[in-house]
Length: 228
Ligand code: NI
Image 1 (cartoon, rainbow, N blue to C red):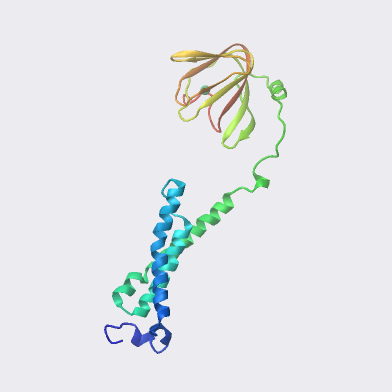
Image 2: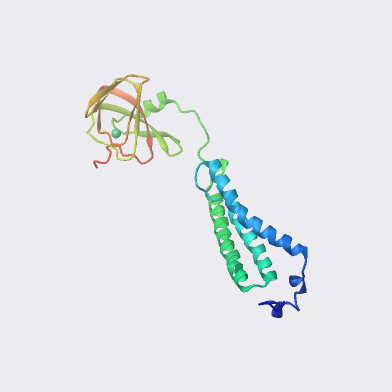
């Protein structure tokens, strides 16, 4: 090839198969092209299935192999503009794949195995746990459910007005009568009744007589809300 051939003078004698005029090369070109163009189709279908825009790992593998095979075909064609169009892509995609694998490894490490996910399951008796509590307004964590804590508390008297900016708070009365004052009304809860105070809603729990209450809220929720 004398018509603008570029690498052939350098590579031709060492790698003669690169410049063979064969139908196999057409197949190579079609394969590279096919992989490189179906990656978007694949990504689109994947996103449609998951109903959100995502780039599946296979997209990067299709990109890498599609551009690598296309680069090989471009070298066979021996046209500088085509070679330039593909010569950096495999490296970029290889880099993305390396980052992807690193993330997957990190995720794998962070994933707690079933054996170390938490303490062994056990039966917790609310009655026994309440019996251990002597002070009022001192919630005690008796269980964790993922990011949520289940707490028991004995309440007596008026608590302060407060709100929790980011956390909802569930009150579950076990024993007694709990009143929860709200700025625009009040809730009266008896045994076996629950109420959820949404985040940002001011409230004041009041227990005229002792109340045993189960609280379910996000870990780190402060009893007095954001006031203190
Ligand atoms: Ni509260």
